[in-house]
Length: 228
Ligand SMILES: Nc1ncnc2c1ncn2[C@@H]1O[C@H](COP(=O)(O)OP(=O)(O)O)[C@@H](O)[C@H]1O
Ligand SMILES: [Mg+2]
Image (cartoon, rainbow, N blue to C red):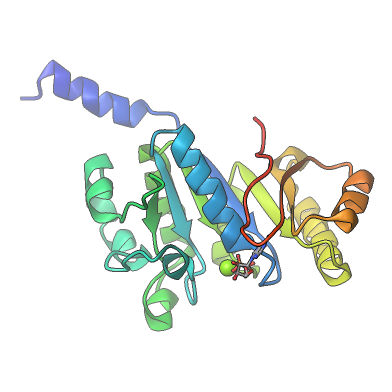
């Protein structure tokens, strides 16, 4: 028999509003997307008392675990196969916790393992994580494929990473056109410019989009976070 306290706990989990899902995307590498995802997740972890998970969805060659120096004993491969027995305690016992307070789900250890993961498994996994964390921050990578599109569709906010350099600006424009074709609400997309300088200020002055995160310098830090 279930006690009323147990029932209450179960209901709390079932009825919890889904956690906010924020993904960082850019269609070229080397622009600082992983750096930004880590910065966002760690600063949110401080605000949300650790109820944040950073997910490395660059399944073939994710490098979040190297950036953070965390173990990869439990990765996306394990979580998709464990999905039937996931609850908040389970997740907090298997996912490594970074000193900043965020939990981390690293990318698989080998490309072969990553190849077996499907978009529908990722979709289910994100729902599970959203049910047990206040925020799910995703390093969503640099290419359009089934998994990335699922992740972008299911994100409440997409941080579109860019550099104030012509090739990156061109790519950012292509991404924005793609998001328009996908009929994403414009408030879902936030432009984030790395290595912000005078050129960044020039672009910002001409952009009608929400701008959020601007960082520069040898040690990248967030200067401003997305509102809302
Ligand atoms: N604003 C910055 N200032 C200094 N170094 C940065 C900055 N942004 C990124 N880097 C460094 O540049 C490299 C590429 O960044 P990374 O986040 O891995 O890019 P991406 O994920 O887009 O490929 C990393 O070594 C990172 O530490
Ligand atoms: Mg990266």
